[in-house]
Image (cartoon, rainbow, N blue to C red; front, side, top):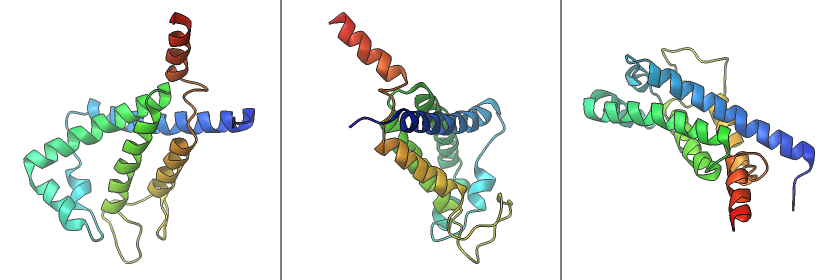
Length: 159
């Protein structure tokens, strides 16, 4: 079953805007040689606080985490924006956002050094974007608008 034009437009725009957010966040981190997630990890809360503090306290793990975070964000974002490998990118983005949420859950009684955008109770912007990526995964649009469509049509043309 196909999507209506409005559904297609809304899903493509959702995919591209999430992609832009990921690409921008990754690019900012990649282009800043002094960026590290250390203070963010040390500010973790919730039941996985010790795990994130362990990463922050080990230079090798922190270096791997920093690189995986920055490049993961950028590549996921680029994939979503270009419309290629979007289902894989959606899953990778969901995993990354889940790690962000587990690092800083919006649970009552947990206070963080860094202020958040607004006041939340369990649901925060990270979780909303995670579920938006679940929609992108469940309702793929690369075949409608993206490089995947061009590649598929070129294979048909070249066959």
